[in-house]
Image: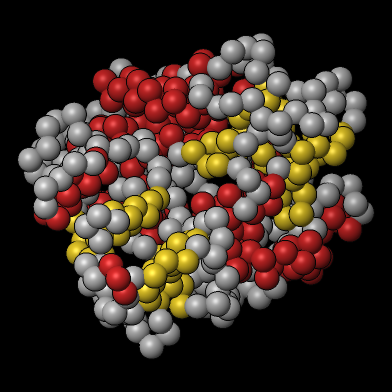
Length: 490
């Protein structure tokens, strides 16, 4: 990189970084100008942590800073680099700068002090082809807005999802085949819900027909739910739906795993995929996690999610950790028996992002009912902006622990830009009074995605209710029913 001055060098680095799309985290050292740059992509899809001296609270005050993708919480005051821009540390006095690389994923520098600047990802002077997440469309129009199968946004969503999937499913190298004879490169974190099943259905149109796809479906033994089933249903405000029939569980007629909500929807969606796409092997991998195994791995998972440390973080991480391990029961081709199976796939598709973009959470409907489109857009913008802070760094640390990579088709920059710049009524159906007789029971949340699922032939999937992963897999509230998601675990 040629630059005659430090300011020219900074502009050159920023131009290059701003031109990169996709998931990444980086630490870049410009030795000539004594500058260090670091950050995470616009959405924060990859993890990057930093550690500073214990007596300091932030990067700008510390005399020492260390970077890592994962870290031991017992060794330092680790925090996440925010996914809100490009950070530059000025280290002009290079003679007093020392480097150490304690491990392949760590980089540390020391200097007194370490002033830094933060630069926005968006450049007002960049041309239209530069990567951008766009700005939320806050145009409001009175009247009824019809969102149905004929709406242009349904086909636009299909186009953008397919374009997002192409580089994510067609560029996967052949994984190591030790102990495997299966032609599997791709697996999907699969609850049987709307978001992940649409990805599976569209991936089918892109992949060679002889490529098998593993559907990773995780379910947990939750002692609290089992005990509640044995004692009979007893619901209170905010409690989960009625537990399964006590007689079924006590007589061992049905396993507690098969009664998990995500297992039921997973098998149902698997059957629908087989019916619609019969030419492909869809391998349903039933990942059953006993309570004892959950406890055995708890400390490891707590370390992986650090610095996140709430009960909700942990319950979500439980599901992602064991699902991405990819070890479960898979049916033989004749369907007669189930055998222990480990997916060879190194790439996992995740449906994360659909709820935030298309209004899939209950709080989105609540916001609209409270104050219309304005409140709904406020909620959506908040959710999209904090994806990196709340979800993505944590999930990356958990999933990559197994040497696998999560890919997020709904969080492709072009798709996100299209979604946020589209009128809100092209995504949600909260004001639509037109109920197409051909599409019954399509609820307003994520309506454009539900219509796409219906159009793709997945009538059952299109009507599936939203269910958080920790409740679908039953990782939430394993011991104490009244524990709040915001309760700290340490």
